[in-house]
Image 1 (cartoon, helix red, strand yellow):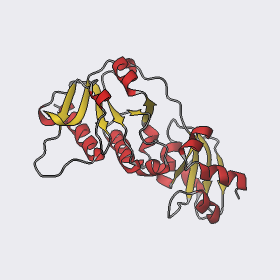
Image 2: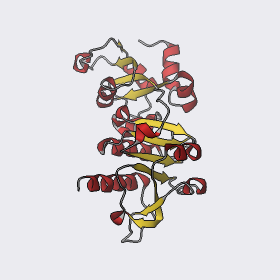
Image 3: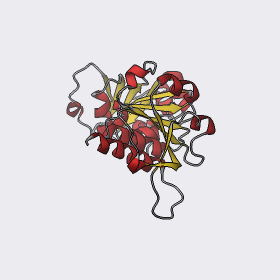
Image 4: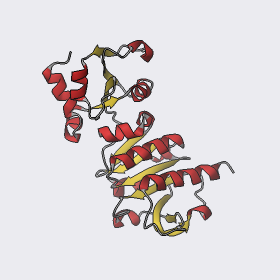
Length: 249
């Protein structure tokens, strides 16, 4: 049974300002909760309803686990169909980015991505291709937004998502910067080398002019049909796939 104050806190985490204030977010669903339990994230508490068997979690650490009513789970959930289990997780504070952490690998840079579904897809894509860092402009959608957490399907537990001022940080990192743009080098002819930052822009406006100035090479996915543009999540997957393919040569 949750108290009114606990329900109020857990419900408030659907809003960014409250997540920021409390340094907490909610993860819903068995698969995602398991991923976070087995990650470097710190679990504050786990909530489950009576029909859920907590033994399947195989907890090896002391985590506060509470059985709550279906009604309470519905109150704290952001989903239309609440799950049997949810976890209260601490938002991590990642170490400052530097060249040493990102050298000899590729990282994704997001400039003003707004759609939670796209963000979740990008996080899952990064996880699939072994990319560990996503660097975001401060106005990019919050990675701990419930819709992003749900769309990432647990992959967020393995990705370091950094929010920063791109114009200040990208030059300091000192790695090659590639930009996903409509007019640039054909992606299938591009030599990405062994390391770099891949920049993706806002769904409607693309990469901002001040970020464009920092891009060393514009890269394009060639268009064979008549679509005006590609979804940014799909574009990210194609870039990651091409970089991965070339690394196996």
